[in-house]
Image 1 (tube, one colour):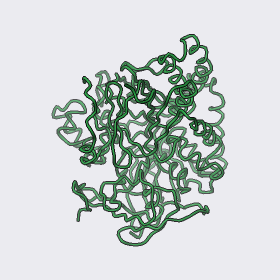
Image 2: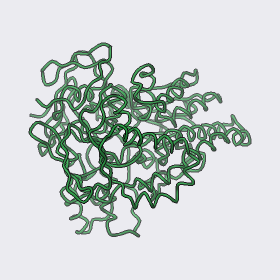
Image 3: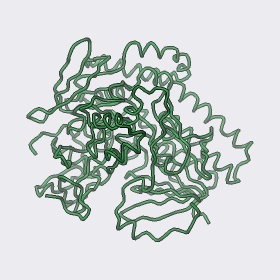
Image 4: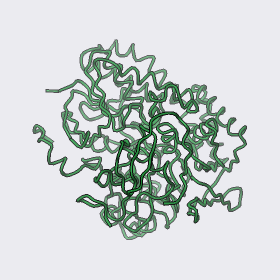
Length: 461
Length: 105
């Protein structure tokens, strides 16, 4: 017997939006999120920042409405709750305050969002090198501004963070961008479609204008990233751009190459995944409502395929409506009628993606880095060692993992799976590579906590 | 530990929390994570790998596990997922992750 109607894993835009629609439709909803506050990464601490940190911008502040909508008698929000197991039923096992418990529900929505794509190059493990999104989290949660930073990589988030730093009075020292002119040209056929997302396109242009106005030096078509530490602890960043070797000394090197779906939970749940070539990432199969091939499991938001915060909120609404329909609270006709607005919004929000994906692709020397680059940060496995294992016959993530411990550390492959795939696919364009397996516990858990867990009711596996 | 912080903390009003890092007193604004407090305190490493390589908080969202430190005697604590509390004892970790607790020497 289900204890609640719907468990939502992840309180980002998709999860929050789904919760509000499901609760208003009469369902009892439990939302679990790892972080201390709802919002996900995009709207992190948005409700705590209502009257401060205005440099984060209006698009960020818009997230407060989603957080406020969680204040509903049918919604229970538990923060600091880490889901580490998902069983058929569905049943969700999660840890909070060093104690684990299992809750069953008629429906589970997986809305666990994205992570930044790993950006490996020699020196990326040094203190002082960090993802740009991580620095943005520090701006949102602690009012900490990067000092004397270089932003390096590509993609819209790089421009947004540069603009936020400018508005906060701590502009970046330089922008080192990897996208090339031919890549921009190849993206132009997608521009007509992107016009459906005109406000987003305009916003992007205004960010670039702001960066120009602040006279932040920009390098484009940059490659060959390399970082070392100086005696005083600064980062010496070298790269190639404009046909020359370039060197910059900075306090912080903030890198970014877009985001990829976090798929540990969807893979562990047995949902079929496919390779999205345009976005360079695996994502779970789902229908237009977010329903998957596993009974009772829906997906929504960036964890189901990268679309951004607005697309995530719309996808959450669609999943919420479909779950209401499956619960007998809405007829399929009413569901379809009420979905029209969210579907149109989802279309508009996604319209710009093909352009962005083509214009800002991760460069090949990041996808498959040089031999002296650490690929697996946890177990300190280099790209050279992995290439050697591949030459010796290792096939797929599992054999590399078994022979080199690559992906066997506490991050469970979150920081190396994508790069490992890049190395495995070098020179083998046509050969499909299956997604690596993910198994419970999908986040590390203390043995004592596992032992203290009362055995769940027997369910056939 | 004499590397200056790589961040400038906005002068916002609010309470401050006292904690110790490897026995030395430190403080940070209330409501931040241990990882944010450590990054505001210094630009130096907070963990050394098995091979002795310096690391500190990286992803800030619970994904990479490079921010592992010992908090109030519990090793392998994700600093970026732990809110700083008054009087916390934080220690940097070196070498192998220890099963039994306590920082490895």
